[in-house]
Image 1 (cartoon, one colour):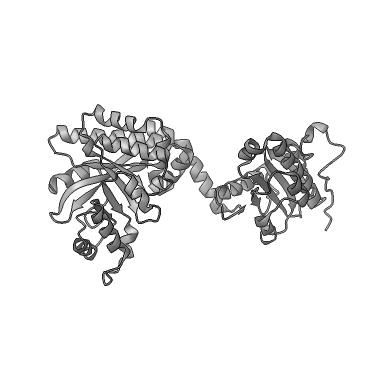
Image 2 (cartoon, rainbow, N blue to C red):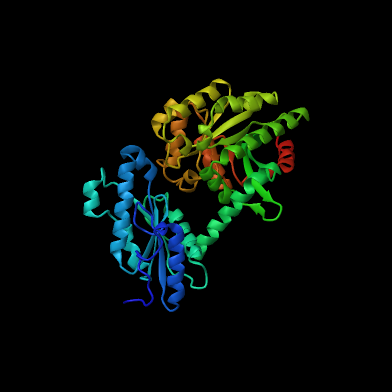
Length: 435
């Protein structure tokens, strides 16, 4: 179907400055100009906006050279001009392209999932192993500037940027809301740290033989003055993605040490507290020295500050990570491996890394079948005992689960059966009542 009043993508009468020299497409500014005109002149026509992006284009340039990278961009530009004579296409940014095309429906654009470079480009380029991601605004709003639809398409693109199973993202209201929430979190995070909005809660670890407290895990909570309590699951993944997790972890470690010092001064004989160290923290220069300096600044025995690592943090068997953990262990810190059984840890890393405690993931307990003597929980307990490692079972919620763990020889547990994570003052009272 021909659409009336459709300016061609390569409008020969347009200003040469509006054409990107490398690709032959419109510049970003020119694209927005002509796309707005096209939408305005066709009020009864539905359109899609599609933004594309090459995965790891920077690495492609580094490996094969900028000439190969330029050729890839040029051939892509030529290909876009051949798709449909009625589309408007532009170079959105360095290696991103944007097109305005007639609406063909989400189902019809799924061909992009299997996008491949044309044969000519495949022959010219040093590799055909190039992945392209696409973001789609499925129905352009005629009452708003096309830049808004481009933003929506870009949000959809970002949603699949790190998803190796999916190459096409389609914008919807839920996705837009999620991105807005992420922006709010990122806009507020540094101020939240300065204003001490992050609060450390403590969940007791209990000795099942004595029903007395023997430790605690430090868990961070964000209490915003306007937004209120924020679930850690909403902000921790964002902090891990943008790198802010390290600043927050440093803050938590200092808060834990401050609390331990206060309890010691008050004569409370504090229990050891474990603090999480994320995978990204290991990229911090002199991490072992920084943790040691924080603990030493409060005159605390290193055994009071447990280092809690997730399975995923150690899954790549990095020599650098092994070295840092060894330094901390040699300095007297107790090393706990969290989420054991969630699926990342290899048996070789258990023997290579100097762990003191295995913290069993709650999934082992939930999937356990007491009637069988060959459950994963049973085997995991036997493995820990063979390696002389202490075990902490997290997620204990019922008396039946507690008795089951006792029968397997598990001595230390953590979970709602005894207590949920508590604010510091409430934890102090709990600690006093369970000594």
